[in-house]
Image (tube, rainbow, N blue to C red; front, side):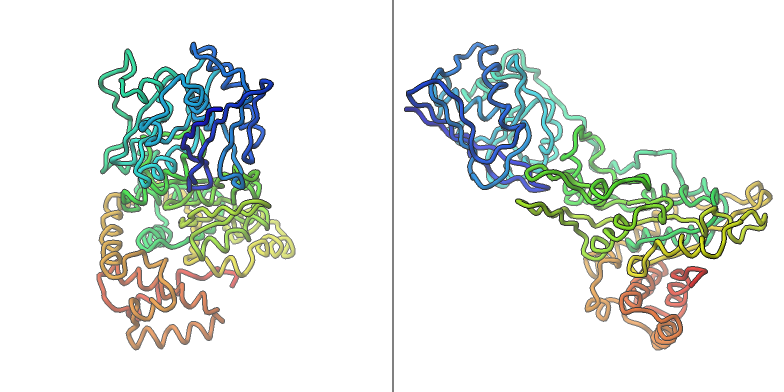
Length: 508
């Protein structure tokens, strides 16, 4: 009888719980049993491991083999267990040393039938967990650049089984390059993926641009409404160019979510996400989902610390729209399955765009709209009151005349506006340690004091507009941001008046 243990990690959302692979060899008829709640993909590892060991020149044990993936009540999925299973069998059969090196390492990787090691998804959460546990990580060479985002982590990249054997024996694999530089972004590289975008590209739309600046400065959600071609999508696409750089902790947290989906580009880990799903996207695509053991993030989680842009907002299904309500309040999204519950961080900025009516031309000077009142009512009713109550800014982007488009002076560039946003965010960080949009009701009394004129105006607005308690708080948060942009410590009447004005739909 022979027994060997190898440590690895499962993928469970943005966490990576430890899994101990126990390889047991016993006398009896040759067999290969894989236990510990593996899914079909993990069970297929038996055939991949057998072929990989023989192709790499090792002897496959012709004995009664039992491989246990502990803990047994944790669902296992994916091909990341191939390499640790193979090394466990080699250690149990005495073909490699089952010594201190194996005990101090964690191992992940998929095996090819020729013994090569292929990349897997979700390496970044595994690397973070391995560093926290104080262990080194043996992983596919194609995932090495991703793991290097975690500072001070000892990584051993491998191309095949022989490379892994060499690292465990304390040898550097043969023909290994002396310099292996990962293609990662420099610490200050925060360029948006579409670097040519600039706020000055948008002609006119002064009110919408002002709302975009306020949204960027305080982390607020924004709804733009107006006819087709007014520039709503252009404005939304330029919001990331106004946002401040991600901190290293925020960048790692965001990258950990994106690493769960292959392929992952480590060079873009410092960029704020900009997600723009089509209105035909399903509920699992927006919220996230999958079978137990392999629950993947949706667009809500993938927009964490970035922007989620929903164009043609009323065209999304009602279930998708209502699923936005809790993440907008809590900053996280939970996907529940029979055996598992996975929570993803989801503190994103929602930017939505919609038309005033189904055809989009209600109120247009051309009188092209032929929608009936019933059609308009049904279109607007797709947005529930509770959802609209969670949107901080609601601004019209009207259609501009040809003369305005031709002679509009060049507006401010993204760099100029981003400087003001950065200063406002710095004030918020010094004062409360987070953006204004994340303030709780109790924190508003402490960090968002109102001058007497502003307090009186807020009471009148709440009574006249029939504001809910949530809307009352959100107007106050926006006013706090407007005051920060103006460099004021207290919220004045002008700040609050602008916040109220920026939260009104024309149809009430």
